Amino acid sequence: MEAVRADNPSFVSVEAQGNDIEVRLTATSAASARATLDDLLACLRAAERTATDGAVAPNGG
Image 1 (cartoon, rainbow, N blue to C red):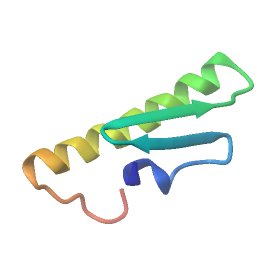
Image 2 (cartoon, rainbow, N blue to C red; image 1 turned 90 degrees about the vertical axis):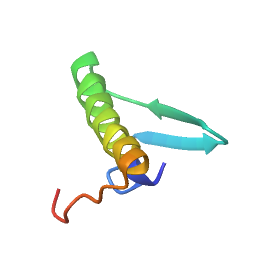
Image 3 (cartoon, one colour; image 1 turned 180 degrees about the vertical axis):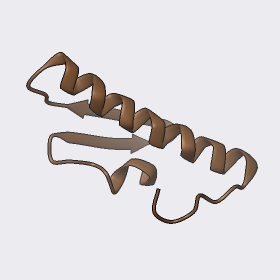
Image 4 (cartoon, rainbow, N blue to C red; image 1 turned 45 degrees about the vertical axis):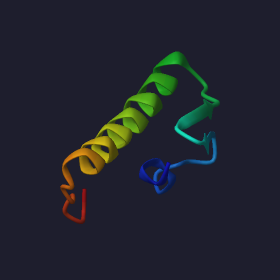
């Protein structure tokens, strides 16, 4: 959940309970919702890789 907290805009809520993460978003269009979800999934994938192999991403993205 920490992986998406920094980029978590006001129209997205993220909650974690155990191993489950729930994401809720409000968007003005399907394209906007998809772009937001794509960004969130990329952040989660990076966090998963870091947890799996111990890699640390450089600062600045």
